[in-house]
Amino acid sequence: MKPRVLTGVRPTGALHLGHFFGMLEQTVLLQSEFDVFLMVADVQALTDNFFQPERVRESVLAVARDALRCGVDPSVTTLFIQSLIPEIAELTVFLGNLVSVARLESNPTVKSELALKRGVFGDSVSFGFLGYPVSQAADITVFDAVCVPVGEDQLPMLELTRDVVRKFNRLYGVTLVEPQARLVSGARLRGLDGLEKMGKSLGNAIFLSDSSDVVGSKVLGAVTDPLKLRLKDVGHPEVCTVFAYHQLFVDAQGIEAECRSGSRGCVACKKELAGTINHFLEPMQTEYSDAYLLQVLLEGTKKARVVARETLARVKRAMKLDYVEAA
Image (cartoon, rainbow, N blue to C red; front, top):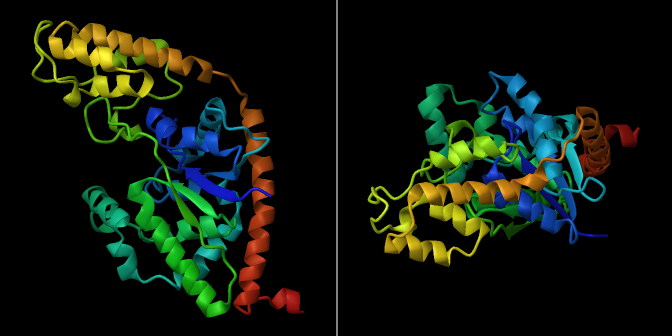
């Protein structure tokens, strides 16, 4: 059997180019080497969308649609919905006893996100948000994942999972699989507005489902070199968002040389990029019916739950909670 990988995506809207280069591209490549479990993490999405659950629900099929369009093959990859696996919630409760509040608050990933959330929610940051690394540990361990693709910023989260597994196995006997990190080398896309990160809610993203006209309009509004005000001005491509995007799709040495020499105008450069992106996105416009997408998700969930049930049964035996089995 192939070693199992778990990865996931939060359904909080349609997916964008940042998701493709940061996660989906890697997921598609892993399909031939691993038994890939791809989780639509609707429970995790609710940690900061609890006040608009309809947004999460409406995005589940959109995420599945974009995943299939990018090349995720449901015949080899298990695509499933997190909230339909109750064993995750049960395991989260058990694992929560093995992690201190201080450890959660000091986790670098949680710490930085917590600062952002407090700017929005003040002192109303939820227990669910603070505790989502524990839920994430349950996501990984309930499926016996041996490998988890992560970016460098997510390494502390995975290390917390590894610590929890070691503590559980030390207390109750070897029961859970300790996962390894697979560092994702995909590009981290900056937003069209020049911000460090492309985000669904920031208004600075190109979505995989965007039409050619929408892509063209968004790219024309992208931030360029602030010092290049006229056509003949020499450019500084290293600070230009449009050039950073060119580098994702083509060998951009010629574009760089023209920019630095002052022979390339920003408008023409943007139009060329829009054409390149539209050509890239064209194969991803395949239509899938909602009924088909739901069928794929439910079939994947059924398969995933078989694995989760087996793991939770092991956990309960190890923790002496196997009353039904003992009866």
